Image (cartoon, rainbow, N blue to C red):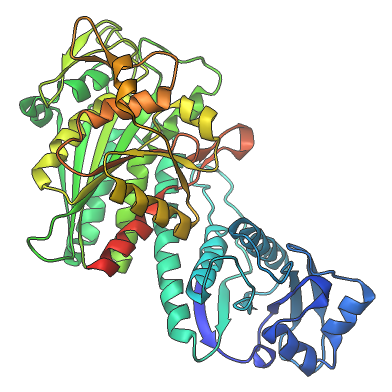
Amino acid sequence: MEFVVKNARPETLKTATLVVAVGEGGALDAAASAVDAATSGALSAAVKRGDIAGKAGQTLLLTNLPGIKAERVLLVGSGASEGLSDRQYRKLASGALGVLKSLGGSDAAIALGDVPVKNRDGYARLRLLAETLADGDYVFDRFKSKKAEPRPLKKLTLVTTKASQPEAERALAHALAITHGTAYAKDFGNLPPNVCNPVYVADQAKALGKQFKDAGLSVEVLDEKKMRELGMGSFLAVAQGSAQPPRLVVLQYKGGAKNAQPYTLVGKGITFDTGGISIKPSAGMDEMKYDMCGAASVLGTFRALMELKPAINVVGLLALAENMPSGTATRPGDIVTSMSGQTIEILNTDAEGRLVLCDTLTYAERFQPKAVIDIATLTGACITALGSLVSGLMGNNDALIDQIKQAGDRADDRVWQLPLHDEYQEQLDSPFADMANIGGPKAGTITAGCFLARYAKAYPWVHLDVAGTAWISGGKDKAATGRPVPLLVQYLLDRTAEA
């Protein structure tokens, strides 16, 4: 779908459908008032009749109104005057898009720039609106023999004023880059594991590098031999039960000064997770193709960066492996040596994400990073603790933690901090190795973070557990969400603004 920003009076726009807002009590904002005046009070009359009360999310379609060029006017309820929450605003936008998709028009003009949203200025409101509309256009039907029917709606115009047009164009550019990156991440998560294996993801990353070579992107792929030479015994232990070889993908975007330290993103990429010898229950195991969504989010973030071209340096590391049970698989009780030289007693082979991440975090040291963020669908305990609305957050640097929190709030891709107290480290004690890979049944998300913290002492580091937010679970509605691409892109935009 095409999106454009246009400075125009809404009542003069020639369009299939014009979308304007009505607040509670029939309050009309500037755009709706202009349309009401041009149509001799048609909107006010609809309110007076009780056809729409202005409650958030209500819609009313009016056709053949005199005095304007739009074929239809879609009224959407914008709620109370004190403003909507982000969630309410998204629902408003999604509801309007649902109606527009059901109509025959090929275009629509949306004049919702004056709808108040709590704690958001004009830029942030329009960006949230554009992201919601663009994300609502996402379809994944690659493996359907019958593809989705082509939609009549092809173009959306975001109506603005002359004074706010530059701000609106910036908001739209950011929104589209984030949405394109999110869709790219969704695609990887939604692919079946017989297609999306470590080599496939690595090949796609290389293709991305070739596509955007001139934009400052380079991609290197480390194979099993190179990983063995580096001493990545923990990473390789996860992959040894699978016929699919592991890969470590290194993406480098150099948009900043030559000697500027890079911000580094590390993504867990278990393309399918059976649990290994500690095998998972069969119910819902199909969803373990989503265990690579951390790596997918890093790829999606880089895809967004290729549109935004911020003046910073960014490194992405994708830790790709498949966790399978076989005669060569790692056993509970095995002891492996990580790249850092620390030894690990593997008590549960289903706690494999931290085993690929720990070696990747050690590898990250060579880039002398300004900060490191790892993203992983790491623990079911995080879903128990936080559900599917916010991602878990832990880290070793208060300033970095605050930056991530702020980016999450700005992007409406929120996080919640969990403690990383030293006392939790004791749960990882092993009588035979430097540590165990699990800390028992209590505080599973936190002890997983404690494990990773032992490998992230050389730099400021944050861990995002996205087990509950990276995909929607269950039945016909299961799907990747692309989170936390919006958060990561916002974080990098914020760092660019500071430079």
